[in-house]
Image (cartoon, rainbow, N blue to C red; front, side, top):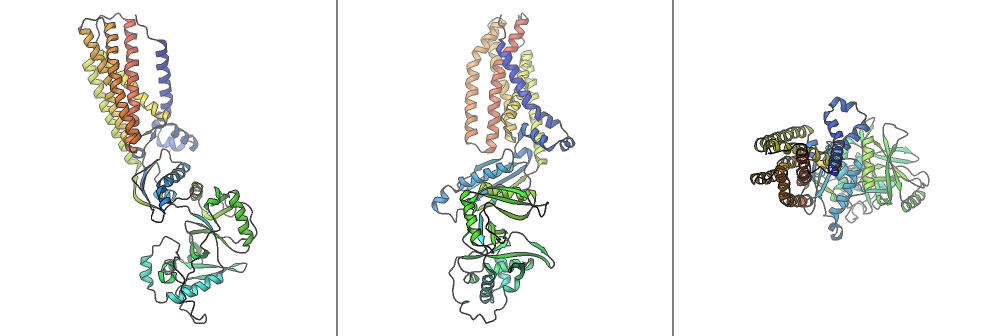
Length: 546
């Protein structure tokens, strides 16, 4: 009499217990109503979702982005690894942002493909990923120099077609380049000669205390002044070491919305490389908004102290991607850290801190493709795939019972156990379930009984030779074992190749197929054999329903 080995029973119980324990959060989450989820504590719900089977972009909804790294301004050495560096920085940003199971992979020579399951805010995602995050500290020039350059701009801008210029300059992009040499046409004009107020008429100088003034431009004049300053003719009178920058946001005033413009030194006093950390902090003046505190490196802190000590009374502009977020007046020598003071919401402050911590991108990013998958489409896909699994599973179950009778029921039991093990293993390993992954499960439903078919056919052959039932079972399993191993291992090798070289879609299929192959081998070779041994131990069978 062949007894069932105790270690097999213990192994089966342990594996089933682990699968059930891993699947419990997923079952609980699926069974919970929307009202129940909303009523849960946010931390508890987040923990439950983290423990449950993760759904991919095509099932949960989210964003699909294709970006291209713009290498046009990079040298050969910088361009060589620009994409790899960009991927690393984007990965750091997304990881700190908290998106579960993102997919970030290279797509060709200059492209990066990103999938963000569960993230539906398109603009926020684009700002987080595509922001260059070039942080600079630049000294603001005196208002007298500002007026003098504006006077020269008036001299050369008197014949410009403002309507045509405005059409040629985008409303975004608040910086003006100064890459041409200075000519003396405007300088040669007498300062007493009255210049037509083309540009200066659009700027209002407002005292801000301490003898300094702010240069403000009303909202309706911003685009025109930006176009004037960007024109090639005007660029000739702006010194190469200076540039005009705009404030990040509009402000509200008695006469409407306005934006501040600054004249700053083009060479920064410090850059983002001096920042070791960035944290959102409370704004004591406005509790509804936050600041972003910048923790500087030791070297950066020492330089910041020297710069502030040498420029007391001047404004120091904190510039991010060419936009001035704040320009405080240096009242005293500042040892230590700095802060970006803006009217940030909690979300904006956290996102800004993330991109500053992760560092600046090596080159600008162009968005080539943007696609949002709604959760409704994902739920519809899940329903269709579950229906496909149910139809395929029921068909296989009925066929096995019809063709192999009672032995088919044992194979069907192994099939159900196989599905439990697959889902339990995916939950335990933190794998992501995608539509192709569900297709892999559907395929596994057929593969799960394939090994049993081989075994049952071998047993039938032995029974036709008038072998006793127990001997036929032993012989059937031993003869089918090598074939089962050979067939499944070759399939598993193929799945591993797909997992290593495939795209995100193919990898989802490869993961479930790999787990399904291992689970089907376990249930076919070990579990069904245990059932046959238990039956033949209890009953003295003269024939076998197979």
